[in-house]
Length: 125
Image (tube, rainbow, N blue to C red; front, side, top):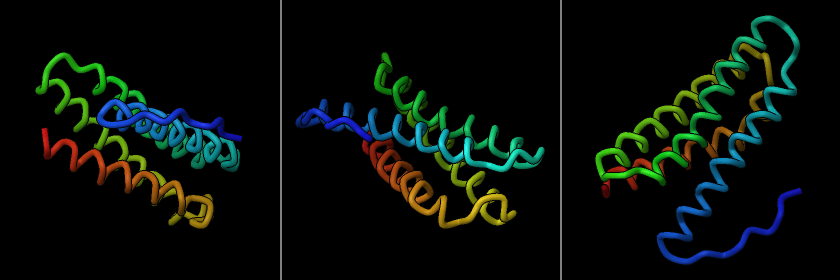
């Protein structure tokens, strides 16, 4: 059960809420990996997926601490790449029938939204 999120406004609000959102993406990804079968291929793909998903959250936090616009742009680009890689691994997990697509649908949608939002933020940098 998620705790109630404090409400922030403006740029600070966006940043804090998006930090929580990317962290929740990581936590949901962990639960997916925990539910994978214990076969070798599922575990290998799961580890790849979890690396990219967790990197999405970590790199967004790093972007928020950037010391320059150039560093912010770079970290945001890495975050977008990692979210896109997460989408790739979810596609592979679903298409290989290791996990049903229905189990991944909302998480894939969240990754897509993260990519769209951060791509727009990067474009405006």
